Image (cartoon, rainbow, N blue to C red; front, side):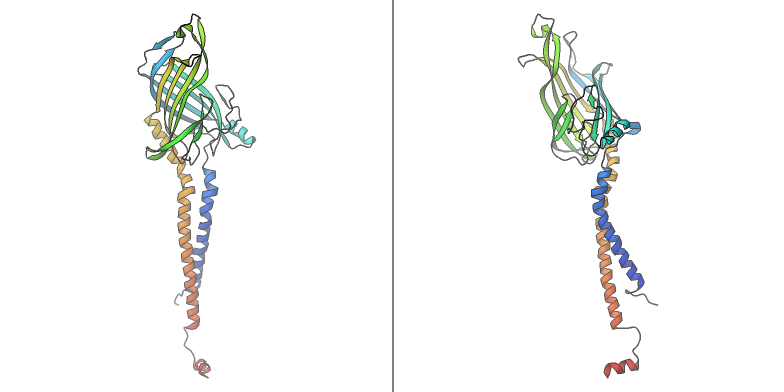
Length: 346
């Protein structure tokens, strides 16, 4: 028996194409607007065994010892800066109990010279919304044991998923306040078109130091001088995950007298992420981004394209099947009998 477009198989195929096509068209926005936000979150516990480490190396060009009141010959003292971050599962649970979907992290930050001298060190706890990376005040967040208001500032550890090409409020852990991180363009980092941000903070007071009086020509053994901090920070950020792929920091700290004159430079240092660190972070960003990009971009585009094709095929098949059914009714396969013809012409 010959197959026809009006047969059961044709009806089944056209209906299947229409149903699958419509399901795919519904799936496309669901993937982008429902699945993507679920996937696009920083992990509660970062990295292998709950650790993330960022290593930078650089040089010190000026170093002053307040104890001896003498500047050290520091043309190129090599330094290594290591930032180690551990996720706190207990902190994340505490945040969840307060109704926040946050990653709570404890970080130690240490800068050491090549001969083992500690130039700077600090420890801090942050709590950041896992989607927006905005900091929240909970879970005993503090910098060097001191509680600091952080609510609403951007995390210094990671920028938001789908980082906008716009000014970003970055929380500076030395100034203990949010500063403007300005978007200045895009640049290739390990094959990633990274968003480039820059912070240029002018000399900002960060405390008072009892310094030897002879620094300002005083006969007093010590005098209070204002310690100022200047930061020029550049970040290269994966625009999908918000992971900081590379960073360069130029720091200058000085002592300033009551007249606003810099008396001495305490520290001038430049550090940059190591090439090995950049490679590791690029690999991490690509791994994290893949499922999100499938949900946000590749998957919806594929579902939309295939869905439209199937709906079109199903619609065309339905039209053709309908026309074939009508043709079979108008021109039946069986030959007309003499009585049928007689009825027609009577």
